[in-house]
Every structure is written in structure tokens, then in C-alpha cells.
Image (cartoon, rainbow over all chains, first blue to last red):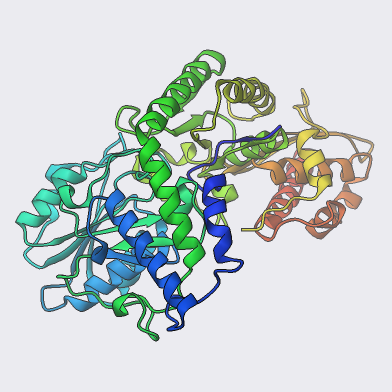
Length: 383
Length: 126
């Protein structure tokens, strides 16, 4: 028995996607930059994939830059825009709960002399527009705020933030990694300058992502040498990955509405059962403005990693923000930003569902979770 | 990140030894706290210089529970002087190794033992 509830970490590769990718690992292996016919045939496939992706994101293909994933896209966009636009200023705003590929990068830029502000979140896990307004400055070059958070799933009011950013004459980037599978996103309607997407979060392959850029805005490349992607990103094309991304996005967008509804129903059932069967639990972050597949739960008086490992021994796979499970032994900065007290930081589990999660999966999870919580509590020194 | 526990560590986590609290103990000690994500509460009964019984409660991860199990098992029945010789390396070895970032759990179990013995010796002097 295996119940996979860690879909914010990665998702299962879709069978149709795998099938679409396979020829590019077999007979269609030619480099799309090669001039011979096999190469140029693949070049057409590359550009066709780009067109399809652009259409599904409601933007134009000249704005799509293929990368190795969203971490690279985040690094490329933020560093590239900040470095290339120093005539405009040196100020960057990010939220306090951005993914490490934004958060740690911003800290690095700060060390290198850029002026960085971290926009806090409220106790619901959402940034406040009034506080944002106060941070905007004349020399603010870029604002980077994620559409939805990877740990607590809360959705940020990016529409409003984009509007204010534009009025200020600054550029806006949004990490769309977690949101893209469930939120209707039109790049052009949102007036987004930059965005990052990763294929493996919507049943595509790992190792491929997209940086959405605005060709009118200056940006320095991260990887130089070869000149692929109009010099924005050098390196041989991962064509199998790009074809996979295109197919996965097509499937995801066409099923988005029904997946959203289906996943939310199962998630809400999960929460109902949790509340009914397990005492002393708290939800981290606002439930209403949250992705339909996310539940981040605090189990009082017991430690998160212990819950995770015991769940795993029962075939149930989840994730935790507990210090114990982190390489650096530090608790989640997202949960800290949410205002959790020190003693509350090490008792949290993230459950992230997928379109394949069934009610039976939830029942099995609840049955086991109930036993696990009871056992761990039975020898907890915390009264 | 590599966080592969040995089967032995997992067994000790899922079926820990010496769990609980001794009533009217000869010594007790708490090490760690909820903020660091690990807390162990030890209680001990000593008879004729030997550790007759030792138990623990845990707010901690799998390796915290496993290392405390191994430590308590190792010193149960031993003299206080013998118990003092137990080293965190012995615990790691007994478990067949611990993930690098989890080695501190074995150190904590030993620190807890030291604190427990100190409490016992302090009470003995009174």
C-alpha cells in the first residue's frame, strides 16, 4: 500500500507524457541546433512545443525561455533583472515566504550590495497590500511574489500587487510553480513581466522548466556560451523534457477545472475526518485562500519527523517543516513568518494531494494517523 | 538529502525500549527542549550502586527515540561507574550508523545520561 501525499515536492509522470517523450530518447535524438535534417526536424518540434506552451499560458512564444527547472528560472530572472537594470535602481522586494531559490538568492544579492526588502505575511499566511505599498520605492526595480506558497498553499493577491508595481514603474515576477496546476493563469491578462514554472509539479518530467520573460526588459543570462534561446539561456536543449512539459501543461490546463473541484472535495473530506478523529490539531495558514491540494497541520505535543517516519512505515508519504528533518537543523522560515511560536515549529506535517488521491486513500491515512498520534503522545513529556 | 535510517533504528523507533516514567525515582533529568525539536525526560532507580531501572519520555524524532532506547538498554543493570563509560559512538555503532545530521541525537542521549547520573550523585551526597 502506498499513499503519496507529497505532491508539492513532485508529482507522478503522466503516462501520455512519458509516451510523448520516449521518441526523443530513442530515434529522434538529434540536437535541435544541428543543421542536418534530423536536427532541423527536432527544431520544428521544439518551436511547436514553445507555441503550444505559450498558448496554454495565454502569452506569446517569444516570452518563453526553457530552463532546467524553476530554481534556475528564479535565479536567472531575479539576478538577471537586478544586475541588468542598475541604472533604474538597486531595490528588490520579495515576500518572506518565497521558495529558497528566491529567498536565498535575495539574501545573496543583499550581500552583494543590492537593497532587499522582505514583505511579511499575516497570521493567515498572506501578504498585506498596505504593507506592500509602503515598501515600494522610486528605485524599486523588481518585485517577486509567488502566486501560491509551497508549504502552506496560501494564495497571494498578485493581481493587486502587479497593478501597484506597474504604477510604480517597477517590474513584477511571480513564481507560479505550485499554482499552475490549479489556478487559471493568463500571463498577458495578469500583465506579468516575469514568471517561473516547473514541469514536474504537474505530472511532467523533472529537469525542465520555463522562465517567462519580457523581451522589452533588460535581463542578463545566467548561463553563457552557445547562444541557445536567443542568448537568454545557453546549453543543449532538453528536447524530451520540453516535449514532456508541453504535453503535461496541455493535459493539466485542459483538466484544471475538474481537478480543482475533485481535489478540493477530497481535501475537505480529509480535513473533516482529521478534525473528527484526531485531537489537538491546528491548520497552519488560511484555509479559504489556499490551493485545493494543500493541508499543513500542526499536531500538538509530538514531533513532526517522528510522525512522518511512522507514516512512511505505513506507506503514507508526506513532508514536514520540522528542524529535525532539515539538513541544517533549522525550522521552516515559512512557518516562522506565519507567527508560530518556537515550541510550535517542530510539530507540523504538510499533506499535498493530487488528482489521483481517493477517499479510500484518506480513510487509510486517517486510520493510521490516529494510531500514530496516540502512540507518540503516550510517551510525550509535554503535558 | 540523505536520511536513510538503518532497519535497527527504525525498529527501535517503532518499538522503543524503556519507555515511560518511574514513580519515585532516585534521579531524574530533562535534556533538550521543544524549541530545538528534541526533548528527553529520564528517570532512574538505583540499587546497590547498580542501575536497576531507567525509563524515558520523548518529544523527538525517530532517531531521538531510537538512541534513547539504545542508551537505556545499554546501562540497565550496569554500575554507575560502568554507565559513565558509555560513549555516543557506542550508540551509533549499535544502530549500524546514523545519518550525519542525526548523530547529535546520540550525543544528546549521552548528555541526558550524564545529567541523570549527576542528579543521582548530588542526591546521594545529601
